[in-house]
Length: 108
Image: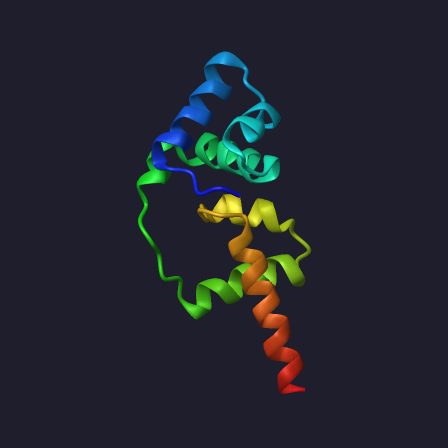
């Protein structure tokens, strides 16, 4: 996926909200992944456009572990947990889960 600027993200959201431009259409126009754009739109819908102002966040081990447990042990959908937590990317939680599984396999 191409790296989208903050303005690109705002434009994508506004075009979706105001002009019914689909995530599929935006994905083609911006050379981005449709699922990631759908996540972006839903993230903004849930947390407001201000979520785009959040800078880099270094999440604590405890925060990551709670998120991982919700997905692996409580069987919550990873994208839903990511959205609820306001993670900037849907891939973050998947990376955390992959690392957790690698670490627990290595500890066995």
